[in-house]
Image: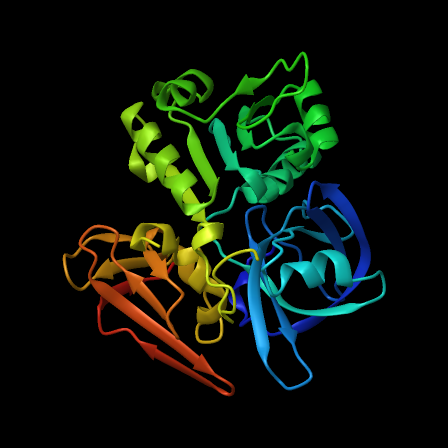
Length: 260
Length: 88
């Protein structure tokens, strides 16, 4: 991406919904058409702002789930029944509707195709969204960086981007999925939570000096980061994006605390 | 709800700070005025469920920034930041 795209001050702009499709249980993928979009880096997010007729505004942050090469900017939105934004985005929005957003945001939690060190991605739940962008960009850019994804989801129906992840696995990306609550018959992946031992076994070894991106709920990412440090990884090599703990998040808050 | 489970990171403040700065704040190396630790702002802890956002040092927990927004206004207190190093 051109550096200038980060340099200018961001303003709110309109995006047109090109598609709103179910992606996993209670999760939708919103594909947006944005005029004048200068591209983005995998890992960046956008802020979405909804305005009620009385002027009340609610703002939320969503990671971009599509690669810069994609014709649309895609967001993965998990519906939380007591959320004030996500039920509208998943169930209320139709193709042709317009949304107000600001972005792309963030230059810290990103991956660039010119990075050639081994890359380790660790995701919990909808925290996989930015990594779908990373993996698609890795493929499109023909990157030679070895990549592993360790992804924790509740059940197979909760796995986001399942088909795409399968395709990435077929081109040599290490994709390991751990299902925490329920496994289908004959499940060949991992079962249960990402314990320190699972992390040590399935993450690139520390002596290969991988760069590591971790995204998920606050409790998840902090437990993973602790395990990574225990396994010998340097704290500075670990980049984290927390999106709060869903149960503890404020229901009616207008601040972009979580992906509700 | 524990303080730990409410914790976000500098990434969550980036959109609000983009109303103020032309550079990406999350990559700006930020020196804590409390303990002198320096790290990208993305590493700092953010608590966003107050009326404003509070940014704290991940090492000493000192408050480094407060950000509040009302329609038409952004209020930014940076009294806890010793220095910002921005790559240009």
